[in-house]
Image 1 (cartoon, rainbow, N blue to C red):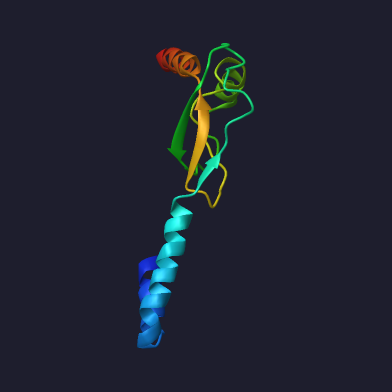
Image 2 (cartoon, rainbow, N blue to C red):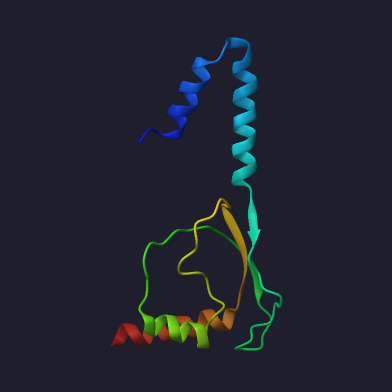
Length: 120
């Protein structure tokens, strides 16, 4: 696979000299706009339905995790006991960052659960 920078330099080298700076600036501008994109993944309410406390807003980088990171026991427990924690897996998207709600009590409960599972 050819790195993007190499492809970019190759394309620029093929252009007539009077167009190089215009095309380079246009491409870099588009890349900068794409990198700054933030998708809002917050739900309708900023109150955790499990712990009935106000959640905080965080913006996190998008991550791609292939396969299940945790077992079904974790996934089931997470869904019912600490649903508003940082994502384990994120779907593929053109967005570079996302804004989500995070419940501090959910984070605390998740850590307690992970600590208990680790002791087993």
